Image 1 (cartoon, rainbow, N blue to C red):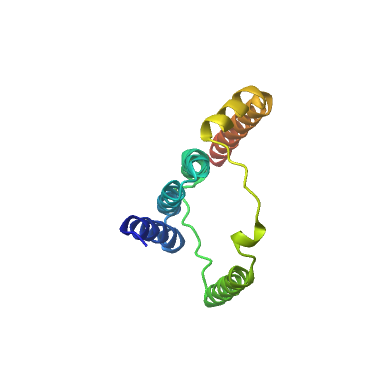
Image 2 (cartoon, rainbow, N blue to C red):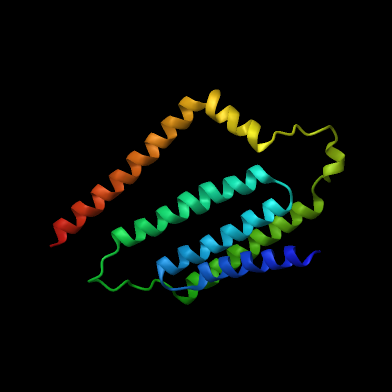
Length: 167
């Protein structure tokens, strides 16, 4: 393992662990964003340019920033947030995480090796994917963009109406 891989893995683990442990929702989303950036850097280091750049554009550039805006627009400053953490929730969460880890570890160790799958994998460059999105799939891409914009505007309208109703 190289030092860069270990550094990126540490950034990813620290960011996601902070996202699970911090109390402030905005800080949690920002820590999750750090974890997602670390994951994207790992993809880029492994030579998966399309997945890495998609990770940055979609998750870091859209989802994480949208989550920060949604939290900031909808939180009520006059009310204290009630803490729902108790021992039973922590215990069930820990057991669920351990069970999921056991299932994933079993699947990894008993799974089929990549060499057994055989056959050449099709390879497309980021440029080829971009050309396909801008020529062949331009209509679905535009429809998704309009749908996401409408959802963001709708969330803003709902947040504004809710604040006006509270005053």
